[in-house]
Length: 603
Image (cartoon, helix red, strand yellow):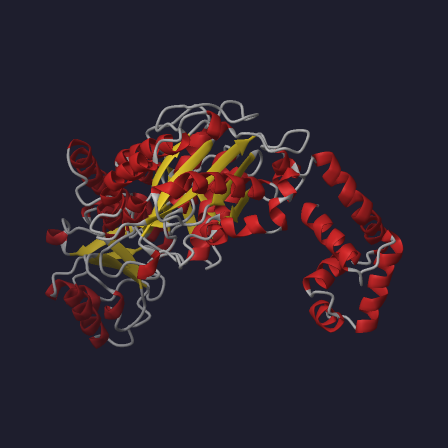
């Protein structure tokens, strides 16, 4: 805005005392000060407001005005409340330095002038940035990516002083400002919180932008970056849409600025869709390999297809890779009890007689793109399509920035299941980036960084289960790896929680048997052993169930268990005795310990 515009608003109470020829100066900000030397707080272009408390003698005016002129301020407005009329020595000093001078009537607060200037300057900056963004949008939609989201984030930083980042649905950093002096990005735990809040808000239908104060004490505003490939069901997209996080509170922003930020999200969405489309080749490779594996093609044919896929998935790698298979399934229509351990997961893939049946993924060919089917009970949302995008996100190192790590991942999906073919460098070469050791990917590690946001995004009626195979070194082992990953996923489905995983290591333990125990048998077994203890805890608050869990975790060691529970050993012995009395079991016997252990695992 121009200085001249300030005189056109009578409510500001400004009267020009000098510098009429300089009224076309641009005002870029406003500052209120009574410091004798405010130069360290000036960057040029400000309207400086002062109550003249710095003036003790006429010579002070010359010194003060000289400092303002050297800093390049736009003008000076002096209040009349302290000294009455503005001193003549200040008028003369401003004239010598060609600095426009205004007086502010006593009944107008500096805050009124400050609010007006800030509102006008912000609106003009937003308009300027909107024009820049519009030009950039045309460049991106008609040609190459032209710098990607970082260019727009740098514009927000330089023109509107807004620190902003683009995050994935799980909180992984996709892009951030690159200009010098940019604010530090939110820490990992805060990014996970922000992603979880956004997913929950979208699932609940709350209107954005959404606001949240993170664990770092900063208030953030959250804008969804919606995919161009949207469906009728919000569950199809919210779990893999990007998120624009702005380090500011948008609650009192004018409509113009909110419109601008929504335009920025549309611009970044173009890049998101472009990157998503670039995965088509990898998805097609996964589809072709898995169709060969599932139909029992000769190993030589599968190996030939792998030789074609390896250069695409591992460009520049000279050695033949090992491979792992990861299977994921997203189910809709899961009740709260089932999602939190009510036994619903154990029913999946298991018949009434307790025998595991062929999953839908085995009965149908693997497809890439399109709607391959609907998840059971989910009202038509294709769980496999969501699982595909989630696997592509989960299998990226959570500490890696940008989309490049996804080049190592090929994922296809069926109606309700996604299958990832993950190449690993030869294990003899040692560990490689992404937290993979000599055994390859680990199921629990894959979910460590994404469990919180995805649990919130699935809360209400969704569930994600995931299984990981062992690494295989040839095409001969891929079919077995696929079956192993599916088996591990069914083990994960028997566990409580909205997001669960199991790995091949667990298929050699008792957990392999638990998913295939019929529901009525599970309920009867756990009720017979644990219901007496639960009822006693409910009536007496005796904490017998936690005591039993700790006792078994400590392998029956009285001293270690007492220390863990912060109890005297005699108190622990009393509680264990009460458990034995209520259940008729003896916790010194291995058989009874095993029964209790299994009952707790199945409960």
